Amino acid sequence: MTATQNHPLPDRWSHHLAAILAITSIATLLLALMPWLLGEGSTAQLMQEHGPLENTSTLLWLLAIVLVVALHSRRHIQSWAFAVLFAGFAAREHDWHKTFTGESMLKDDYYQFSNDPLWAKVLAGAIALVLIVALLFVLVRVFRFIILEGGWRRASGLWLTAGFALLFITKTLDRSPGILKEDFGVELPLSNVLFLSLEEGLEIVMPAFICIAIVLFWRETRHAQHPTPLFRTG
Image (cartoon, rainbow, N blue to C red):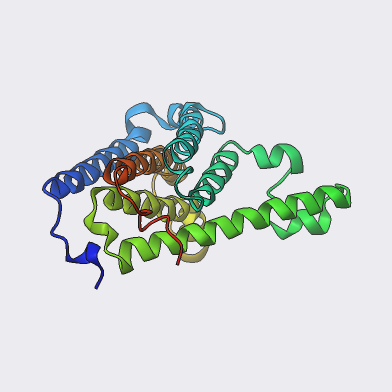
């Protein structure tokens, strides 16, 4: 058992947990009610591509990059993997990858059927590979820190856990309407705009939680002589 796991829970640990649960619950409730409160058309317009919510999400991912680089990059070279991944999230959120390739560089169709020159496909493939490696590295580090090294006992670990949990939840919401309709024949009232509202809204909460976690990591370790468990190698 590591030293982190032997430490008692911080005094304000329960306060952070309560804040995470409250923010997530209130946001989910408001987003779920939005199609009925604002109407289907107004909600769809609010959640549309490059709309105010999506732009806010992109800005929060860019803020996460700034925080990682400013607070952690000088001491922890591994933190650059987080910055690269967050840049990928910001680009995907704003469809910047489609600006250059016309479609997702993570899909086989682009490399098989696109009329782009070979050099463009090689470049897109290289960028996609870097993002995939960064994603795998970050997921392994987060898993080790949270589960194996008791990082969930830290306030910062709680916010980080919540942020990455929302990453998987939003991806599930993105695919839920199609799965429910095609595989189970279930179509909920206003299902498309309902799931869109939940997905786009929680995609703002996700980077906000990550930003809070980054700042808390810095506050917890700014006087430490060794790298934080999240960023150290080995």
